[in-house]
Image (cartoon, rainbow, N blue to C red; front, side, top):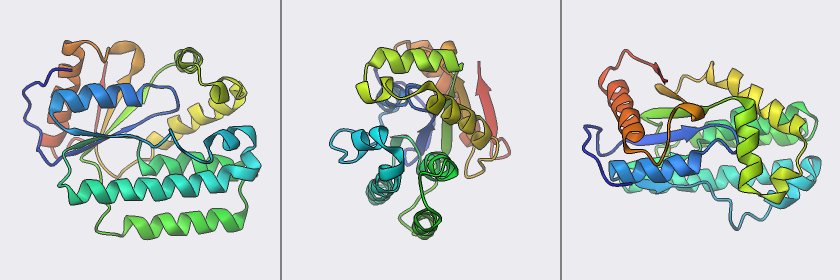
Length: 223
């Protein structure tokens, strides 16, 4: 994506949130290029637990979540040390409030492991290396559209996962975003913008500017 003119603070941290398959990585690429910011991606390739996790949630949930927590904190520290100016693919808040909680509620993580995980997260967010986002872009859409995207990208471990897991995740995101208060939220619908369309990206950037400029505005939905 060609860089566009904007009035966002050059040290901004724009973080994307949304369920699996909703298009966070694609928008991270497009938006970071348009803003002249650096992209920060979730570490999927080379993850030593991911395939095992989808094969056996009960055995590997705690291991996977601890791995993601450590990687996410290292990413936060790096962005802080570089003075930010990043678009980040997925927030650490989702790991804790959705993925770990889902596995705990379904009996796939023990009380002891979940308490340990939560305690480590709480210690991390108190660190000066843990900047909050300036804006959280929440990417949403119909459940049918999201399932189609998961199927079309063709990751076998996701395709073989029962739809019940994806529906549980989907509705948890609906609940979670209603309680999120760490920073302002820009709400996007995947059926109403196109990452490859310059005008769509300009509208997103304009909305980010509005949220950053107006300190009393905490939520904006782009339709």
